[in-house]
Length: 393
Ligand SMILES: C[S@@+](CC[C@H](N)C(=O)[O-])C[C@H]1O[C@@H](n2cnc3c(N)ncnc32)[C@H](O)[C@@H]1O
Image 1 (tube, rainbow, N blue to C red):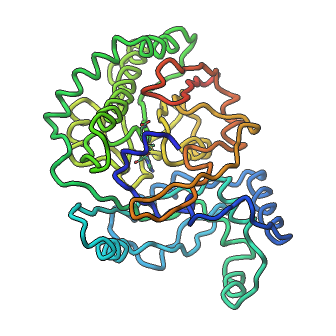
Image 2: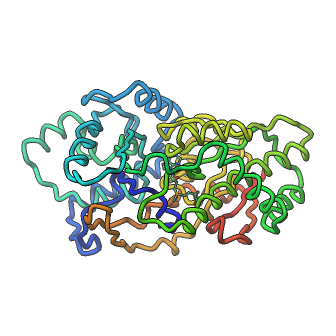
Image 3: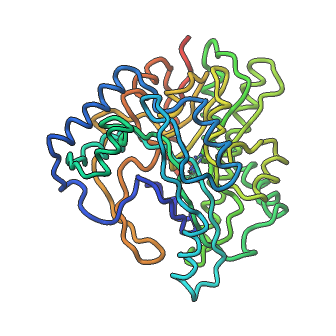
């Protein structure tokens, strides 16, 4: 996981990517588990999509309307709508409040869309031991034998605590922005990134840049965090937003259009972020983590850096953007299978899966073959293992 996660103010996502500490590599995979995983592999290879624009729009609309009912049905990988567990946000927050009565921090929380990546689905299916209790039989009759393992979209509750009033104001952000932007514009990383676009022959038509997970800028300071680290993280995130604006301006100049829109999705954005970003020309979309994808089409540039979700896999299912600026698509050989252990702010140890940050899949590897790939590695402080891809057609 990227070190920039440490600014997360103790975010706790109730997701499938993390589990109570154990040794996941040590588990035994039964014949049933192998069969369930093979079922998913076959479905995937037949072209079944894990996500569609319709399912993403639907989940964003549902979450925008407030706490969904417990009988919420969401699209699964085989196209079927099935009942999906919805975390009760109020109850979760109340429990956390009572667990930490000494806490004077402000506890906040929201429901978000969560994307179960392909590797996670296979992992979950492999854990199936074929147990046939009443619930399982009932479930099978209603949902098909492996229906429970086909859930690629779910709702998670994200909670975090912060010191009220310690985040920078919109005015402070604006002052910081001037310096960060000037530094970015004079950097060799900026020159390298823009040169990739200006040297590329026959740029496809581009009308917008859609960004994912560039990070919150105005988060209050975590009491355990050093000020120097807080500033470093904030500047890194600002630099990424500055890069998105620079790319939009450069591409507009090259294509002779002056209104390349810049959209950004990160459910962690605060109201101050939204106001600030609006002032510098970036429109925030998808506060529940899904709607940004609906905006992506074949005239978009997709930009992201170390997002907590599998941006590349979602994009590979729903669009063929004109260009991508994102974490390098790794080879299959590079897929490590090492879980790490982290200690949560409440002392609980959890295992973190190796697919927590923008994992790749056979489909992302296939997709990137139709792009001309450029390495962009000149600024490790502000970007992590980024590549640029421009569609070949
Ligand atoms: C590790 S941080 C990376 C921040 C920044 N890009 C960087 O490199 O420092 C991951 C970011 O992904 C964001 N994220 C989580 N779910 C997301 C979603 N559904 N859509 C977009 N961003 C998301 C988190 O809020 C967080 O800001």
